[in-house]
Amino acid sequence: MSKQKTLSFHERVKALIRKIPRGKVATYGQLAALAGQPRAARQVAWALHSSSDKDKLPWHRVINSQGTISLPRMGGYEVQRALLEKEKVRFGLRDHVDLERYQWQPRAARTKRGKS
DNA sequence: AACCTGACTTCGG
DNA sequence: TCCGAAGCCAGGT
Image (cartoon, chains in turn orange, red, green):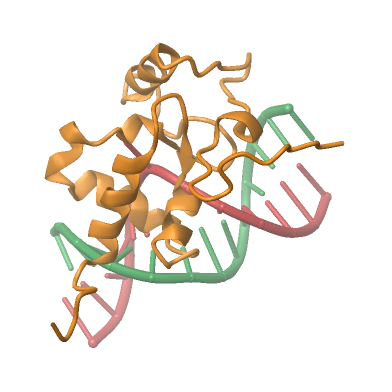
């Protein structure tokens, strides 16, 4: 076993997406950072596009840093939003979700985000 | 090899 | 809060 990290960034991202629990969401930048490339937010999107296993991935739990869905209307937006709402994720009037509350926290488990 | 595009992010007005 | 421009990385033409 000389190299075990044979997994490409692409593979690591998919693995992370599968870990996102139901009712939670993650941003492209977040997944990229967890995969070791905080600047590769775009590649995360590419990974989903190129991924053949997308049907097995909770891709709908991946949104942008603004807490909104990036896909255009009639281009997947409605589908993604429907899937998220089905998981109890609430959307605001401007289609934005509260990342403070719905963003997936892989390590922090639960920290009293006292917030001010 | 060069150029262009993209399910992104961040900053400034 | 909304819109536009610049930066970033990888794949496709």
